[in-house]
Image (cartoon, rainbow, N blue to C red; front, side, top):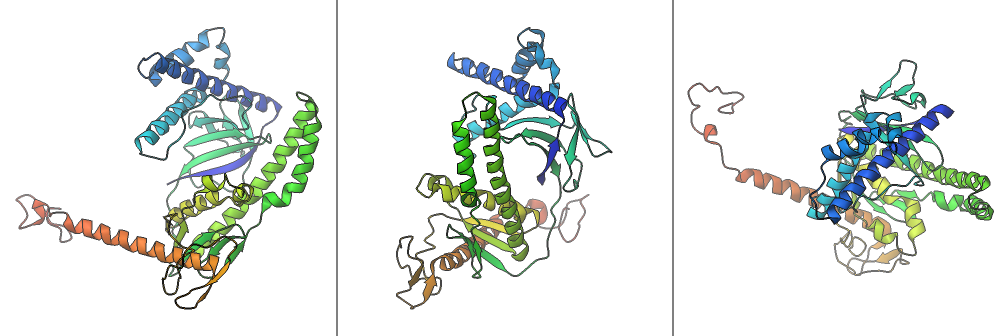
Length: 406
């Protein structure tokens, strides 16, 4: 499996200028090639292939006065920008065909985007013995190694965020790290009053990182609004706001990692509800929903389960987990959000709303897993035996481990 390992980089002034050139050149190649394909589509011409774009907008463009500065950066950066455009188009077309979730058509990039990045393959970077990372036409970047890489990286992404920080993201091919098997499973109900409630009754309190930082953010935003547009003081104030938002995001991500790792280590199977986060993000609860970061947390659970040999599954978002009694199974009807406890009319059990939903998520996940296993076994049972599996083996064939013909 492929994993990303991120590290903070500290380029000097000359290296920052070189990276700025690389970001700009990669952006120009992307925009030029995207414009060529859009113009061809508008004119009714065939889809322009990457080979043609590479020749006209990279190789030949370097020889023109308008694009001669493309030669100042590594050719790998420019070619990779074109490959990324191909990937964006492929994802867009696959979404239209139903092969993956729909994504928007590729759009033009701006130098004012909050995130600038370039991607490199192994021909354009290398790890040095002194702990630095050599990047072609940039130099040896100083890196803060928070942990060692488990294997040689296959690609590198250099990123500059809105706060002016630089990061190196290595893609590494690693094998799974299986944990000892357990007998415990967990259903997780995600919410706002409590971030998560597990089927065993444990509640994880919502840290509300954005809410806790709102007072300082409001002050910084007021200072930013008072600065004249285009001034250096406004640019400094914008960096302060961006850094405060980055601190909030870093704290949330660190907390997500710790809680998701603990859940994966303590349970053999984890089931969560497939929430419509994008829809909830357009309601009056939008700020609290985005502050919780459910999607990032569930994504961490999913990839960590695959890494450590755990089972992970989502149950349907329309499953009536808050309406069904987890004791007797009677559906008691929908309930408004302010109802946090209710009594089952059939068996008289008093339920905590979130704990009852977590138990129903666990039961639904186990049932789906059992049905999937049964369907797979039934399908395998219907597969007809191959001709070499029946009767005596043919002349010249050997038998191994009781399987004829192998």
